Image (cartoon, rainbow, N blue to C red; front, side, top):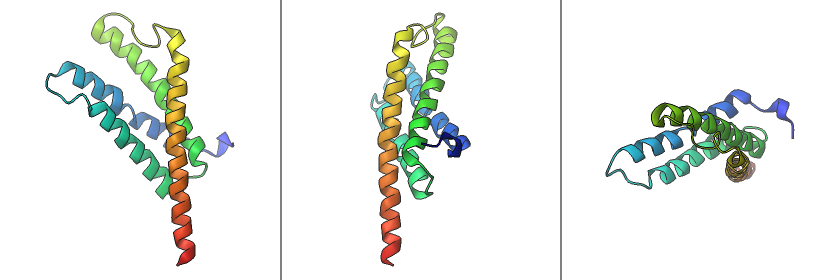
Length: 134
């Protein structure tokens, strides 16, 4: 694991991209008639983007890259949750209001990144194997 060799702009960009999820959650909670499966579909779409970007562009250390992207997303979403809950609801809610929830949020998103990273690694290996046969 070489954190220095990670492409940090990519890691931060992929983590920030995942902020679509909580923003979509806010919209679906505010608007009646919006399909509640939208955040789930957003999670799948974000995962596919992560896997495609890291897998197709042969990013080094795909698992570590996406674990870090998941952790970046977790930190950004915790901050976003605190800011938006205080702004929209008038009081601090979420993990910042209940610090014991911070570790599970970090772990959940690290696991999400790890699973996506393993799939990206598999995609890289599939692509490399296909090149050898030609």
